[in-house]
Length: 127
Image (cartoon, rainbow, N blue to C red; front, side, top):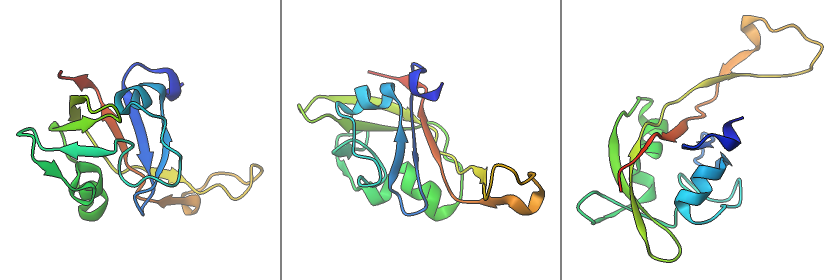
C-alpha cells in the first residue's frame, strides 16, 4: 500500500541506511536506490533552500534519529542524477514497530521495541 501512494515515503534504520522507498520517492530522487546501502536519503546530493550544500549527516532524517525529535515542515532541495532539483517539504519522525519473534506468539507489551525507524514523508512538492 505505501509503495503506491502518490507521496514520497521512505524509511531508514538507526544507522541511517535506507530500508524502504516507495515509487514516488524513487521518482523524486530520479533513481531507485539500493536498499541497505544508501545513507539518510536516496538522493545523491541535497541542498538548503538557498542552494548551499547540505551534508547528508545534517539532513532532517539524520537529525531526527540523532536527536530523537520530530521535525515538521523543513524544506530542502534534492538533486537527481541528471542535475535537476526539486524543492521538498519534509516530515521525518521516529516510530516504534513490534519485534516479531514468531507468528504464533501473541503480541504483548514486552514484544514491542523502539527501533528508531523514522519515516520521511514528502507530502508537498513545492517546485
